[in-house]
Image 1 (cartoon, rainbow, N blue to C red):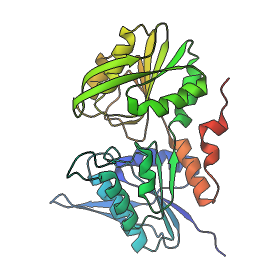
Image 2: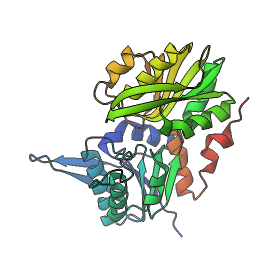
Image 3: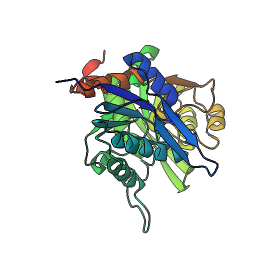
Length: 317
């Protein structure tokens, strides 16, 4: 029986990350042409044969929404080209913050995205630090969920910080912060915020003591940076020696770069699930290419990805 060949396809939104993954795996990216029409529509054309292959499509679905539409069209093109399996690799799952009906007459957009990806023909989905755990249950196909801690914990260990303290920038990040605090056997604090409207923090209070501590804020997404930067300022005001942040997905919209520059943050560590719009002296990018390459290899070899989780590969000293 002939072994199923693996093919990698990149969307335009994640080209740089896809090239890094392809290089690690020693598998060239498929040749894809994106025809652009005068009315704004586009059409992806896969120029290589993928008949009977296990295809991995790499595309984060950050804005604009064309990235999501492009992904759906690539899935559809693969199915119509008789690919045997289509695994969608979405390092960043867009619309994940719209995960519940929190008021009348609103869409649950993250469930809609799951339905669209499934109906388009995906066999499997792979993503990282999805904003809400329940999104995994929105899919009726297998979903592999990777964790940003796999890249951030080794980096944090390399800093060799004394008097370490982990901080959650809001109550929603408490579970993630607690994991880091337990791993490093250190204290944890919470910055409790109140919003008057989206992307604007009206008030924030600190729960816990950070005097004389080197504090690490941890979160899955940094968007405008208002919450994170306000939390950093609050921590310094309450006696922290230094404040750094680790956020998996650098959305960095609006005045985010300006907010980071003017904040008390010493450093912001992010992954490359979303490409930066520009470089910044305070922002350090840690690649997820090796992690996703290993996960992709495990998937097409029918091996468990459990060994990739940080709790199984590192031990706190």
